[in-house]
Length: 131
Image 1 (tube, rainbow, N blue to C red):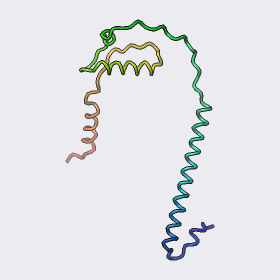
Image 2 (image 1 turned 45 degrees about the vertical axis):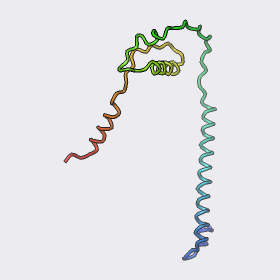
Image 3 (image 1 turned 90 degrees about the vertical axis):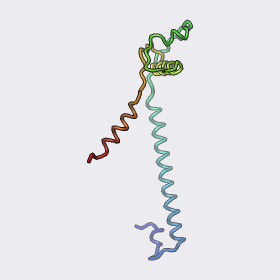
Image 4 (image 1 turned 180 degrees about the horizontal axis):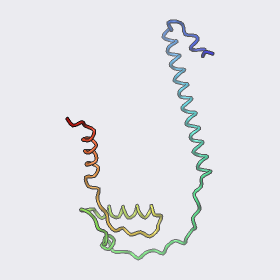
């Protein structure tokens, strides 16, 4: 069985026949992509409804902590180099959020230094052949 559009082509199709073939092909691709998009969205909705997070016990909200002097917040944290206090506060906030409020203690913060640059150089040099 041949598709009618292809079967209608002669030995030398005209410009309009070529254009109609291209447009029909483009529309077919769009329909297939839209169908795949809808199917994957439905699978996502189905998965989120079937997979539910376990309910955690609701504990009473903790009592407000006594205000701590800014100097005491960064005391006891070993830092490498000159890390600004707002970066230390961001790291502490991120760990608090990730640990979902569980107690935490940041002991030290070390910078990444030249690690990524060194790895990039190593990769470039290892990809070249030595003569």
